[in-house]
Length: 253
Image (cartoon, rainbow, N blue to C red):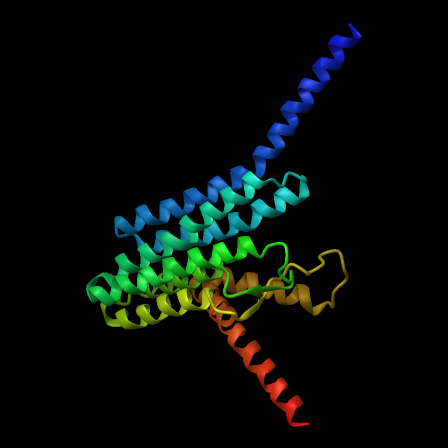
């Protein structure tokens, strides 16, 4: 009887452990679905929904890794699956959305810009996977693919939100797409936010700023999100320029 109870307890433990390992992959699958949904909506001409789906994928992508670490269910399979899902949600989906939205009418320059973005995302993810063990956790090398996707999707969303004709800003869309693609494979450093300690006390102004951000986000989500990722996308260039200026001043002295 005791052996039977032990076997039953072990079986329950195996089922529970298998269920926990499934949890982070469910978030990854949801992010993958959001990226696929963005492609489908772009093909149907619903570009606002396509852009929002990419932002949803970004949120879900941020959750799967944290869930895996909290439940201690990190695995090589999960890492590979996450990378493949990222290629769809933050590589193929944004490029196809902005191509269908504004770049198609540009002809060859349009699809070249979309390909530059897709290739940049693929190279960025490959470099991230190979440098995972040696990279400085405080910084990303190159613009992260979710941020690049948010930059492209945010541009589509804000222009569509204000009912501006995409044909009038086709070349601006081209510049945004190429900028995001090239910046992903650059050597610029971007703050990763991984060193933020949520258990540490912060000044009272920090919660107020967070509340203000949520208020602005609820009022004008397209403007706030796009502006935020534009600032983040340019921060790598600003940080590199500041470091270069410091080195020049140091060598002068």
